[in-house]
Length: 203
Image (cartoon, rainbow, N blue to C red):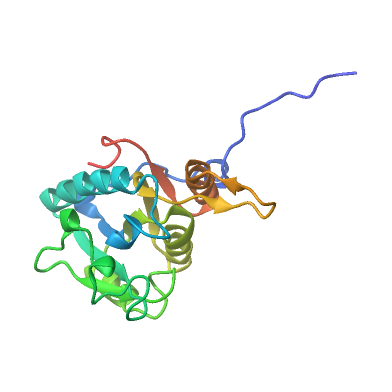
């Protein structure tokens, strides 16, 4: 009887020999997704929202200095409800306020391409490297990354600038936000996106 050789798992991107080096900010488009006050308090407050916002702020500053194209995505909910864009809860967090010339695109679905002109605006910029940062990892980041691949973009997700929340496990318990975050990133890394970790990953 022989023991099978145990090898470390590899992603489909690794197995295909894909270039997994993150893009340089000066050559990329940064898309900041749903970094709104809704995630700081209330029923869907994220345990790691503030940490992600701090990281996103540092990334945004570096992107501005590097001359990256920058787009802000804001989820638009119903008046009086979650993500009400006319109320404080639906506003982009003050630390990440868009500058003049940085487009703000409102969406109503998790995928930032769905029902918006994001694809048209990206095409006008003419860059194929798209970096995603924002909330939530398993939801709007994941769905936008997957759609972006279908549209021919090379997607990178800045892991430190994303966060998510605890989710019910379907058995009366919960799966911790940190686990949901890491699983979502692992899924994306298999085929859909490069995962950048640490401040030095995107320069």
